[in-house]
Amino acid sequence: MKELEERIRRDGIVKPGNVLKVDAFLNHQCDVKLFDQMGREWARLFAGKQIDKILTIEASGIGIACVAARHFGDVPVVFAKKAQSINLDGDQYVTKVYSFTKQREFPVIVSKRFLNPGEHVLLIDDFLANGKAMEGLIELCHEAGVVVEGIGIAIEKGFQDGGAKLREAGYDLQSLAIVDSMDPETGAITFREA
Image 1 (spheres, one colour):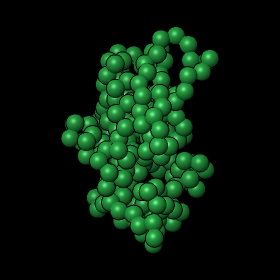
Image 2 (cartoon, helix red, strand yellow; image 1 turned 30 degrees about the vertical axis):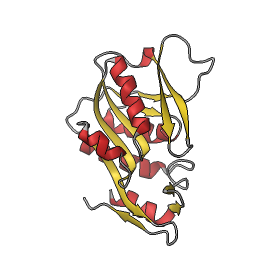
Image 3 (cartoon, helix red, strand yellow; image 1 turned 90 degrees about the horizontal axis):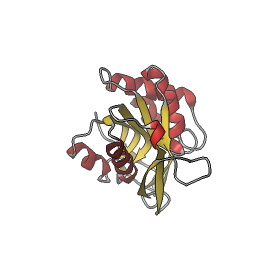
């Protein structure tokens, strides 16, 4: 998606350690118009698939998923929580994932009330690097007996193995921008050609 690539080039900051900072428009300050364009593109890419719900992980995926849901007939958005709270009651699906950005493991929790056997879900998130968050969401989906129809990612780090592993496992993974390389010294970003 050229609009997203242009925005990454203009406002993204490449930092040491393979970090791409896009907080100016994606995961701190949100560009809702860009999110709408992203949702429209995912709707085109996943056209013809049954999508009953969108599942994401807090916090950065929530805004993107909610705007994208408008393009899938206003389906509900469920987000996995990263911490237990008094508001999480009843039976839950729980797994653990390792965060590349936060450099730590955390729980991923979804109430069993919101994932029902036989439902068809689309997984959406802002970044895909090593794929650990997606693997955690997929594990919850399998436990719940829901069908993963596809995975929509805003920015995939193509030089890390998460995307390749998910595609090899047979998932329909649609990343709107795939970064093949980043240089923290020059700030240069190379995108994969479509």
